[in-house]
Amino acid sequence: QVQLVESGGGLVQPGDSLTISCTASGYTFASKIMGWFRQAAGKEREFVAAIAWSNSHTNIANSVKGRFTISRDNAKSTLYLQMSRLKPENPAAYYCARASDLYLTSRSGLYERWGKGTQVTVSS
Image (cartoon, rainbow, N blue to C red):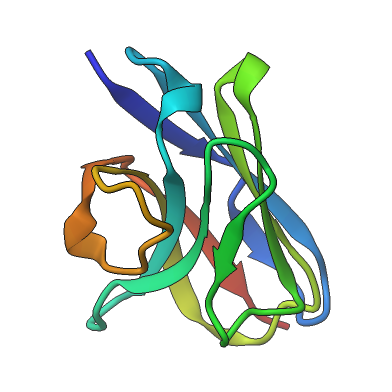
């Protein structure tokens, strides 16, 4: 049974850094492209970042480029999102997802498995 479990969310102040994680189980983690998305209440799910099987290739959304880094530890079946210089914005749930495609796609429809999300709030 495939499971993706996010952790590490919380309340942080503007300018802070935060790293969230996603632990995968039930399949060979290293064989799949992984991604992060986020969704605020009342808004559409937004692509954040994707990473290939190794850490050599990534796709980062323009809105977070230069501030967010996606990485993975295949030995631990864990995906990470390092977020720095966080901006004040509405609370959003961050979701990790497993891609069904072979490309670093930003299209949510091409991700076949999703975690339940971890909440991140940036507020002073």
